[in-house]
Length: 313
Image 1 (cartoon, rainbow, N blue to C red):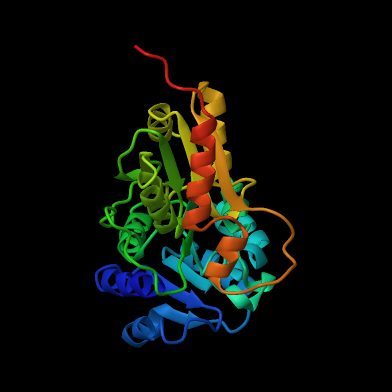
Image 2: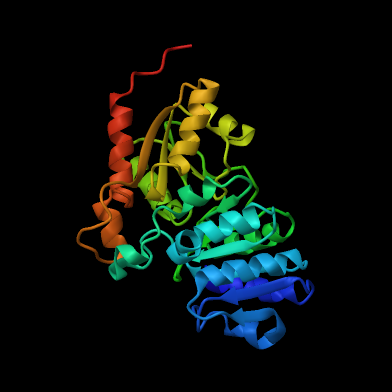
């Protein structure tokens, strides 16, 4: 995803002289193509992420469209105050790019696991929070970011992210993209959890259960009519997010269900428990947290087997 992001930025920058890319001494082997083509619109600030956020705020005030690039927990959490008091307070179109959210950095441990980023940035008024599911959707999101004027937090994968079948790069603000139709339950995923959710739906199909899968890349501050309509059409939803449950996708779905009085049962799959503990690869961490496809399918099946039968018409 990070390669798709930089490549899309480079293509757009050929026609949009406002695009400016900043990095905090990170992304080598990824950002060089942009830096080589646009040396006057690229800046490596060194290991100084908070200063980078301040510089981006100044550039936005001058009319540029800055993208600041760092590991997700550094970009979102280390720079939280600077983002809050800069782009958010002054309503400036700075895009904060967080690389490798969730457990993408695996064995690097809790210091590199960005688990609170989506929830923390979603709490900031006027901040758009987006976690695309694959490289093609990342390209679409980058273009969409440049067509609006709000600050954005964009969480993208570290690398090696496979295409999500059925998504085809689709993205719209506020609206889930349905990539599989089903009748028994909806898997609603954000970011890289889309692939695990699709695989879980396949496992359910082998048990005779039918699952829809939706990709909610944009996590708005409040439930949207588009989200409510999709939830209204399902008797159960399982939200899947590679991050803390508090304040993220599950909170958004819960708000929608509670406010609208929907008859949709909510199940939540996300990161719980302490940050400390054994670490390993991303796949290992997903299994430990019950976020792999088999665990998602088991959670959904258990809920559906307990649910009362639908009334006859």
